[in-house]
Image (cartoon, rainbow, N blue to C red; front, side):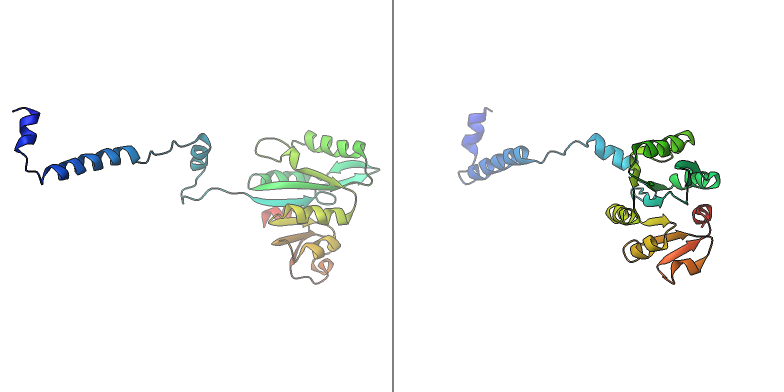
Length: 201
């Protein structure tokens, strides 16, 4: 039986229903949403998810290097070996910013600090990022830099800096051999005798 004969047999009331179904089917095919392709960036983000389904994120820690990681002797930076070893440990679990207060605005002294850190192996994969090394010439500069960075933790040797940052930074650590008395009684500031102790805590 031909297609024409089949249509002739259909009741006049049935034809509109069949035509409507055909149109509806065509519309569904045309407007069906296309699943977007997963970008490489999205794939990388998924690959970084941990077992709990949350992206792994490192906390940011800023460190005032003077008196914590190094000391200046005659304008020359000398690294504190125990502190550098502790820095390597910290760098595996945090995003580290190194803030160094220079004696004066000197490119030569800045280069000397970078060279000393480089020679000690501070920069590299799994350690610190050279681009996160910052310099200033005053304590006020340290405070301003730290407020701008907004880290989860700041480590410093100045009670003035730590007391100023206490209300603004989640955790402030004062490195002082004098103990808790050097914090000025500020409960927002934790006191440790040395940087290695902070990293172990």
